[in-house]
Amino acid sequence: MQTFLRLTMEHFLGLHPREAVVQAAALLGCDSTSAEVAEYFDKHDKLSHLRENFLVPKVSDLPHSDLSVADGSKDCIYLSGNSLGLQPKMVKKYLEEELGNWARFGVQGHTEGSRPWAWAENTIEELMANLVGAKTEEVALMNGLTVNLHLLLLSFYKPNTMRHKILMEDKAFPSDHYAVESQIRLRGFDPQLSMMLLSPRPGEDTLRTEDILEVIQKEGDNIAVVMFSGVQFYTGQLFDMRAITEAGHKKGCFVGFDCAHAVGNVDLKLHDWGVDFACWCSYKYLNSGAGGLAGAFVHEKHKDTIKPTLLGWWGHDLTTRFQMTNVMELQPGVRGFRLSNQPILLVCSLQASLEVFNMTNMQALRSKSVLLTGYLEYLIKYFYTKDLSKPHVHLITPSDPQQRGCQLSLSFSVPIRRVFQELEKRGVVCDMREPSVLRIAPVPLYNSFRDIRRFVDILGEALATSNS
Image (cartoon, rainbow, N blue to C red):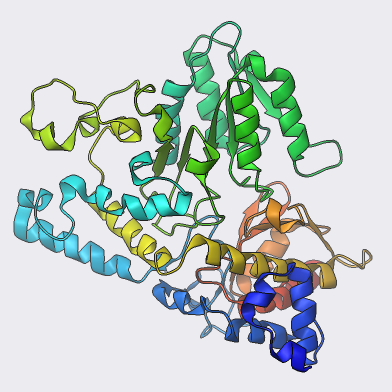
């Protein structure tokens, strides 16, 4: 017992989650499924204070909660940060500041105040670059994700009769699929011939890294761009971005990633991995609000060779932008891809969230995330995967913590919509995706281990009710 008493939280964070849960239970002298384990982890969680920076809805505020089966005074169990992050408390203050500046200064707000509108996004790009493992000059905050993907593909996808294919995962997020399909058509090629969609092996839910690398090795001479998700939105699989990038470069391909479900979720090193380009939204794990300002990355090695196909005023050098000469002085790298000034109110909400991230680092968040998600997996497997004669759960997300972010995708032996509705009644916010998956995302910025323990209990109630 004395040995266990000397263990620190850092020790548990360094273990495989299953082993951490077992050791914590042994330390406490309780069963591994006891709520005491969650309480212990929360008590020693050095990041638990970050939750105080967010507004967590009450159960009674949720439109589909049923107060006959749920306590309306409690915080809801919010496990949908992979769809829309919670609101940072500072958002309202920052928005009110800029509305006030607009009222007081009018047009002069472009150059006055704490975040002058004419270059407001520039002031938070360093914070954004830290989260994706990039240099500040490799990152631009602009537009929405799909707009940025189109702008990047216009410059990086230059097909010819030999090298014209784009390789991506089958069942990529629909917006990515549509963007790639339209870019291929725009160049006069046939998506049926130029779009390579890679599917898991029969009977498997996720792609094997070796299969991805094998396709790149075999087909790479015909592939112009390798374009995967960082984290797959449906399965929650974290792709080996470094290995994919290296394999693509060996065959002469450009390699890019949609990091919508990876940024703020996993530890990214876009610069060190040599990724050519990437884009992401900011309203999921980055908590900037629906339709928030998106981001783009272009590696510095391309700053003098890859130029934007479409030009806009905001791509002009800031020091001479307002001279209005109509002679483009293009900013190097990704900043030259900017087209228009950014909505200041969207800058405000993103700033509020990035400042919370800046209170810690992605390595610490990732360590907590691995244990938090692993604890969820442990309890689900313990309670809901063993007895197939009862309603049960199948996890389609990889069990290896290094092959996933914080999301677990669950499929069920009973109708999913009924399970989802019963969870909503009980104050659980999660995400249902057709045909058969609930996406559960414990976010380390604001979710607790108690949240996980409560969710697992409520899931049991929902399964039982759905089967009655």
